Length: 257
Image (cartoon, rainbow, N blue to C red; front, side, top):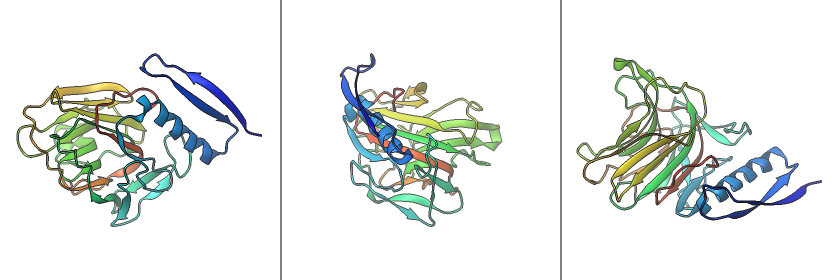
């Protein structure tokens, strides 16, 4: 028999309180759905959440309708960060990736709105030769999150976020080399504050790099949203992606993300 338990939860790092339902004795699939519900509820009431791909068996955007379709192959379902089968997608680095059916998110060019991108990722580091490989999340050639490796400088084990327009205003925030081994789930959160022109990267809820990046110029993001590939790279991502969220404001990550 399922037991319904009402719990009042008031964490000190939220400005608002919430009431949440905790269900016991659910099967694995419902457990995963419930985990996503709890996390979505705890994330500052999800204010400003404009796109959300849980990747729990399909690639629907359950908030903004920017659904993804498989291209040049079919990424396969795999276990998610909680270990539930079929709760994330695996990209084999050989051809398959996901792409939105329409261009977007439209505010990723850095001149319209602050924003936050949150994603879970686990994968390989590329053999690498120019540092622009293995983008696992991108919009065109202008915005990306990646597992970074650069053979020439012997740098690997680095997580990075970037923007690109080929000139001033580009953003580059990443961790030190050698800190993050491959095939481990990492939670990456990138924030762009349009008021201060500040970009920040968080890994597992810890701020790892932040900076102000010159003038606020448009980035080359007039393209489709993609998982498993970037237009700036010829190399497909090899690894898994889970629970991708985009906000039209700065959202500071907490342990519930």
